[in-house]
Length: 309
Ligand SMILES: [Zn+2]
Image (tube, rainbow, N blue to C red):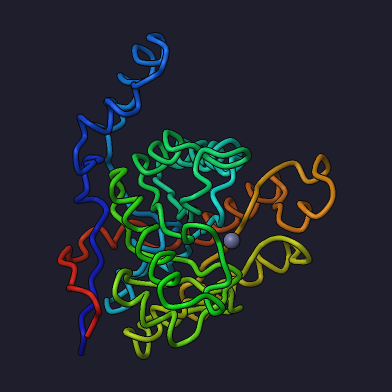
């Protein structure tokens, strides 16, 4: 049987840009001196403090470990935030950090960023992404420009899928998974993804088997449940119950997290209420109390070459 093992994030002790010095210099160029004195030590501190414990709520990269392994009691639930909105950093991240402190855990999540939008209005900056990453988050690709991948030509497809990864890698992130914009993919799209990633999160509704029945294919068709729009808190809790009851892997996806009463127009459809986000996470943790959180720490660390065979 194929053994797909994912890099155990506990082993990634430091944020390691391909060229950390030039990366920092680039951050400093053109910045006021106060920026350099205030932020560079913060960044260096973050670089040195990258330290993880896996939890029941972990990154898709991290929980992907369990596909081929004994699940040793922990039911994995991953949070994925699409498009790299600022509210992920401003609203969701502080809540997870608060709960981590309360429960002495390290809940992490995956942020799927549109690399062409990093630092633009309403989206997270590179520095914010680095902070998430250094707190154990996975930074995954959501392509360069968020096109409908099934409708673009081969050359463009290659660019969207490969260049977004390359961009993230140059900035120092290790990249494992991608999420196809609008959940759109076909065999041609999957074939290109297989050259560059260990998984693709789609928007297909459902739970994922542990282990996956056909990993080399199923990893590129990971199902999810979006907690936004019409999905109520009770309904998403029922999905959590189902994952625990059936021993399956649940990826809960989001776009923005905010006070829903302050959001207007179409954005409301893609916003999860901040109080409900916290309540959901507390619910997941209460469900997980009887499980051995953290047992995925001993997972193997060798990554097989791509494409997976
Ligand atoms: Zn998207």
